[in-house]
Amino acid sequence: MVVAAVGYSGKDDFADIEVKDSKQLSPERREELFGQITAQCRIATVVVSAAEIDGFRERMTMNSLVAMLHARAISEIVPKTAYVDACDVNAPRYGRMVSGRLGFPCRIISEHHADERFRIVSAASIVAKVTRDRKIRELADEYGSIGTGYPSDPETITWLSEYIDRNGHPPRCARTSWKTVGTIISAMEQSSFSDF
Image 1 (tube, one colour):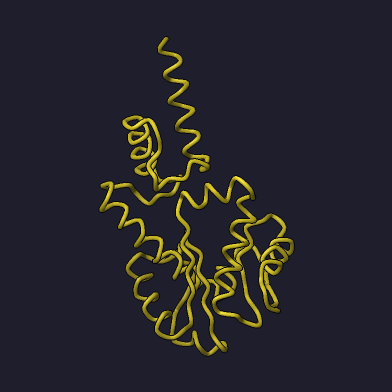
Image 2: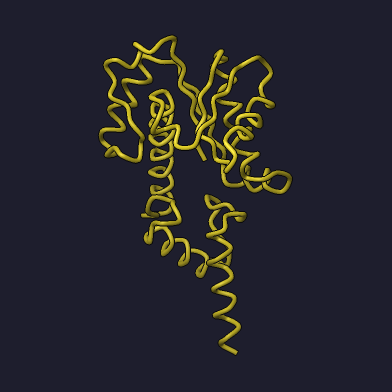
């Protein structure tokens, strides 16, 4: 998992960078914008491995974990105001979760789809997505073609299913607490049971 924060001092910093939600950009365009953003802004990225996520998930919810990671990234920049894309159904509550994990005063503006509404959040989503894509390419060097790593990607699901079937467990790059992994293992166990 990758979480990023981008810091800038005023609205003019993005006058010459056409940022938008990273999902609406091609990989090539994201890389181009990544270079511009990192050259002109302060950035912080927090990368958490699958094993670390599994460890955290034993004692906290996924929303709490993401709030903690948002707070870590924000803490590296120490802004007076921070905009976050709320992953909780209750956006103000999510903002309080992030704020409560900061060791300094910071106004948190927490909204759903913030990456579509605020250019600074769009920039952070680009930094996070490019960083994640690079990590996926590193994993592909190790494991072969694994797809995007998203549960909506049939290539990822096929690769993950074949890996688990072949090895009896998920690869270390997939968290065992991921619902997708649980679903694959359950389907395999159900299939094995029906063989008897």
